Length: 433
Image (cartoon, rainbow, N blue to C red; front, side):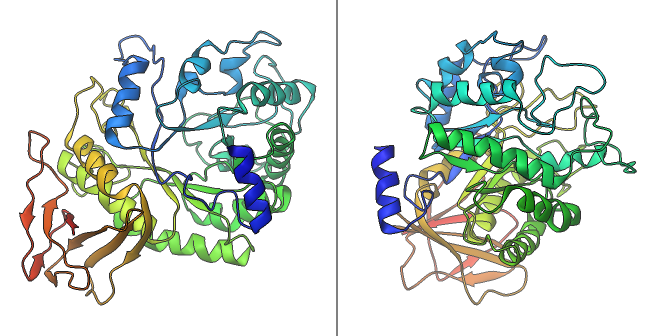
């Protein structure tokens, strides 16, 4: 079926990603085969069942079941596909696999160490790695992401004294690894993938935020090296406050237009917020389980409304809530597997909005008011509103019932009849017809 779709796309002159099979709502960082001492890990079957219940249609970063180089070929010609086979043979949602590394991706083999080990271009070992994984999974995987947040290589640029985002890159190349060189590396990898899987869809490495450096320096340099044909999908990440997302996304859109790639699908491959009140590094609403559940809808609605094809929430299960852990509390479920309010909110989002044909801002709203009309693929309408004051209820396609997107403590929702006006708050309400 995939080959037939590609032929029809070429015949009709349409993009391979401009179809009803493209993901719209995903989950990021799936803790398959999580085995850190002292941490709680769920079995693969439990994770898969949860993904299906939530209505996610895609998943990205499969942790130890992914195709990153160090996990499938830790030493030259010593392959281990047992974990990847277990997940990719019967995935619970469309998999987006990551090649090379989740951080500081390069063509450098994982078993090569010491000074001078860094390789900026594909050598025989890297080509063998890419060919091997693509030949093995071409019939199971459509979406291939080459690296992730490669803009972090900025820390290796000569003269750059910034603190690295987490840890310093391996084999710090003395001459750096420029965005243009990264682009050439991604394009060369994409060519190998397409040689063995002509209907593959290539994701550029997700941009680690939408800072001025990423938009004004990294993205143009990367595009210069990769060329517009070196990738199919633009990916970016955003973890700041939801009310900043629209402005940052507009700036990205202008940059894509100026660079001549505004026709490519855009995916928000990582977004989310924490429920932990004392972790204020990225959001401070103040943070709570209720604010996180509200963010599930606020972030997805803003991104879809800005034109993003897909939105991925980070993450399904949170990491341990240790004081120095900068990612604690981000899961829809706590580190021990307990479902939080956001878990139910994501399920509500998946049930009502994940399969849509359009998401558009509601016109005529006042400052401080946010509203989106969603037309589902089955023709039904949904609306999401939040903000200040009141707004009139939809009349062209009358809404019949509404509910807060934050459930009760039992995880359930109470639907009520819609009056003439809708009273807004910082917690979105979902309306249905």
